[in-house]
Length: 252
Image (cartoon, rainbow, N blue to C red; front, side, top):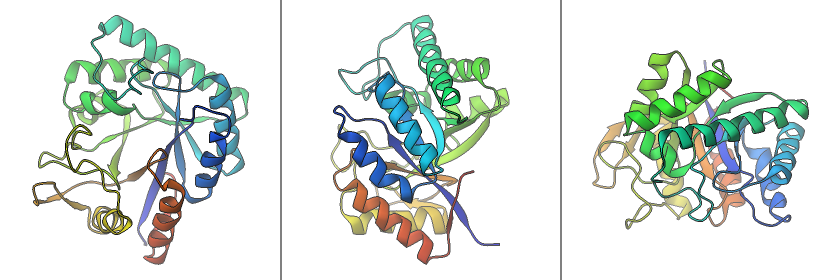
């Protein structure tokens, strides 16, 4: 049996109506998408348009909830009370799920965004809040999380189905956490570097960390970022590389 991988992308993150063109250009190359729910960015119009595109291109639809922090694009850990975070996440996911179903689709997965995703990976209380919210709304949905993280362990213990996610364009630390965007060398921007890391992640389930250490890592879905410069070309290049190497791009 050949190897397969889910290729996902964070979409619906545009600030002007013409941003939908970027999403549509990426759609043919991916198998699932994570659509901004209004926490870090997005509104009902952007959500509806992106859901319609996903349905058009037969791309699995995921909710991408975040800290309610548009000012920082959800990329800063927010000092927020547990009840307030719970309420915000519930609001984001419930509204998103209703829109998906209203348009004739179904919620395939949920993936926390940015700082919420990264902090939950190391903070049990935050992970438990996310897991509790998801279980209360849709306990059968998939959850995209970093493999072997605290968030993944909490989710699995609660009975949720976790999909181990890796990143083609992000640099890893020795503990397999993502290198902070505030630090030098956090992003891979050269196509050759992204493809080299993708080859390692998907074909060998390993990654070379920022410190130069080779680490084993579980990869069931690979994430692309739509706000990375040259994202459309990169999506096409990654799709072609995987296909050329006999990897089927399909949903989990």
